[in-house]
Image 1 (tube, rainbow, N blue to C red):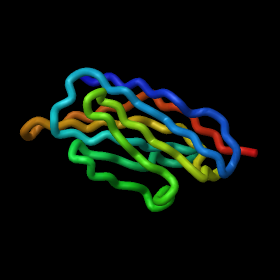
Image 2 (cartoon, rainbow, N blue to C red):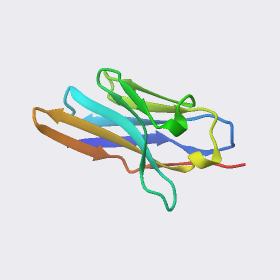
Image 3 (cartoon, rainbow, N blue to C red):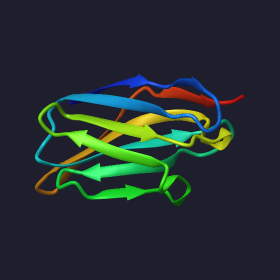
Image 4 (cartoon, rainbow, N blue to C red):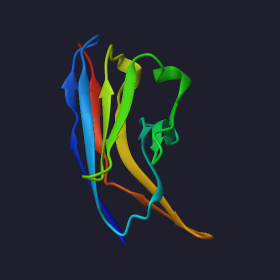
Length: 119
């Protein structure tokens, strides 16, 4: 099992910055991907950014150039730095971990943290 504890989030004005972090504990194998998804009211959950254990990153087009994902492998943490925030970035942000061993893959979700961008 893997436990995810998110922190950060809150209310900011458009154009400001905010970061959210996630600490993972439990059975995480060397082959893993950590990331962030978000879900706005009335919308489906969507990918924001992911980073694999070898440092490969993937971003949604809507956040490229504004958001940066990073990880600390020693601490099993992943951080999403969000700059130039827009009202449309308002959503609940969920931490996600996928970890694999041989043919088995486990996927885990955090409880979510709310990010609100409003003037």
